[in-house]
Length: 373
Image (cartoon, rainbow, N blue to C red):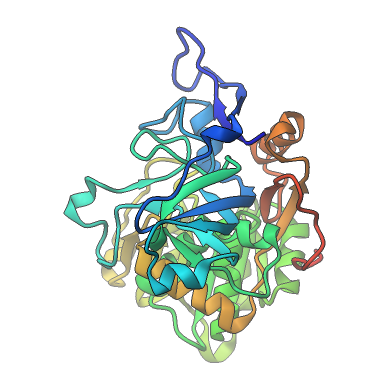
């Protein structure tokens, strides 16, 4: 029987004071959705967690839903087409695809069209009533893309939201180029690791920060030139010594933490360098100082990305045979609530290095592998 996975409401729960339990829902086989004109039916084979899913369970994310299936990342197989399918749809039949992790943003590099009124990440969201924590989903054919052929299901599921966010941060916002020095903070998270893989493939010199020397060593195995532990009071001075003498500055910083990153990084960024921030996990505020003003440093916020950026990112992954880093894979499908909760616990405790993935029934971990780190 097909299933969906949602969160279960708790009466009187207060945002930030609650942790909603998971709820498995069974769908009668005869109630399986059927694709209409311009639509495809996708059998989800793997899905992955993002931090937003943890925030949703704590009611710390806007516009949550108790009826929409969770998760935005998904890899699946197109199993049926709507009537009078287009050549594009016909090319997708029985092929592995990646689902778009958000809706309502087509191509504008500045941000979602219509001032963001139609934009939302999917999964546990009120605006769009589906997610990837369901065995079958009907979607417009424009919302799925052929998966790069070298990716296993778990790797495909690991790519969408972190890949899109990282691509926009590095390519659209930082405008990084071959030979430039790039600092990525908080290596180990999905976005940071995806930025690392993209930047290395582009020929950038990549440096990282982490709270763990072990994670820095793993990042070096993926191509980072070096890294520093941000818990050290003088980490920026340590980083300065790692930079090449012929280019002893940073061209850009890709940051997901906030806090005092500008005060630290301003000393290392070149004149006109860019600080791109895609998250603020340490603090919702950031100091802006006169050093940044005098050095003409650009602070650029970024979040998610457009469908065009998503397509460009997938093609780059295909061309460079990039395999997203998978930290942990749980089998057993949506019925394995204990295993799924274990993935959430890993995310809560910040122990992962890469993505946390759930394989749905019928899929095993064979068929490809992420870097062994």
